[in-house]
Length: 505
Length: 118
Image (tube, each protein chain N blue to C red):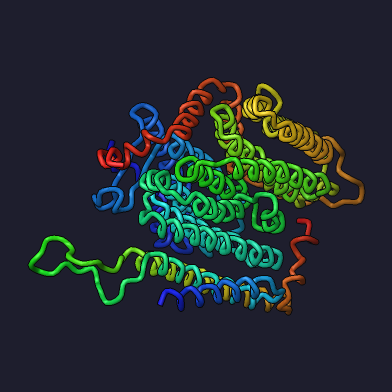
């Protein structure tokens, strides 16, 4: 069904950003615009999701150029879900930014760039054209470069060099893959590519092309040998920025992998084994990194890497249950990881540092907030019935069926290790008394109530969503079930995009 | 023509990879630029090279009468060039700032993020 409203989630952030550029250096106006824009964006995303959920896949031919000749935008259930999660996370981060960022950063255009980043994310979820996906990726990385360097601290800039080099390299790999794909099929439309690749004889060439995509998306989503840039850069920018990055940017890579490997390259035996090995190693390296870190945000950075492995393992098994686990984990992970970095930012506001050894006593001073945070931490670990628990059940179940016992071991080790580091963090930050001889700088205590609320409310919103995902797992499973069906049987997607032309081949 | 482009392509990729593997920041940037240009030539090459046949339908016909040059790879390359132009401009400014702060061109000296515990 053609629906011009598909692009609304992209345009709302574009317009918000442009209006904010007009209100340059007026930080109060920009804050109102940002929260308002993200809220409208959230409403639009919910509307898009409910429309797609009821009426099935929507699409839009840009400038009415018929597919496969023009750029096509497609909102199937996976895209709509991702757009909705982005909007929820973006809304929360937007509120948190208004109170947590220094005025200096806002003066130099934090908010417009933040909305350009959200625009890029929404665009990359909604596009149905592989080259257009590349362009949205570039929108994302150029915005994230600016967010990462904004403020210009030495550590930030040094982290940004690594971040920049790896991400540009990833884009180059991705573009190389697109070039070869265009050379062998002569099309860029993903639905059309799916048909043409299926009919293409030289499977070895297709396999090599898929490796370029795997490399490109692997760097972006921080998969095992390609993840080094993440822990050395994600802890340098302000927490609001790190929350957007940690929650959403690596997951775009996973989304792109899900899309490309379900639609264009159906994983063969070799790719599956490769992905499985990478998944296990990603879980283990992320875990070992997290075990030795004492800075909260660096610990979380390694946990991002660790949990990417869970999703990668699900993709490598590529069965219905495994994909259900992957997509469920994706939904859970975006919300929880964003919240983790917001919590890290909150701890920094209250204690002035993120080094575990130099903080303490949070539970004694702020018991209520600590309990909400505990809820989030429990979800991250996957204590039943909270949100992290359900996807792991699916993943382990399917790994048993497929005899991937090493993967099961890795999942269990990863979960136990996550529990260990989170418990360590809880004891150090919340239960332990403030260590002797350390001067606390509690910026939070003297804030007016309204600003305190601006810091707390986003954490509560995301905690509530996490709780909903956990307790109401049944409704999430319904969505996830449909998404995994769409991923396994892509013919409805192709028929929607190409219409009658799909039958010609 | 194809063979020449393939040779140039291989050279660009090889030089790009070599420069990226060096420890100097400037060489890293040059390597990324060379790789990007290599990719552009790859797209151009794989789109098929047709000499002197612009995709213009002549006035007496409704469809193409002859084989014609595919305009899409050129559009793709143009987009990629513009994007890499912006990225390179940003990267140069970033590296210049880092050089001013660290006073070294060696990537191994960028260790502040590892030592700092904010």
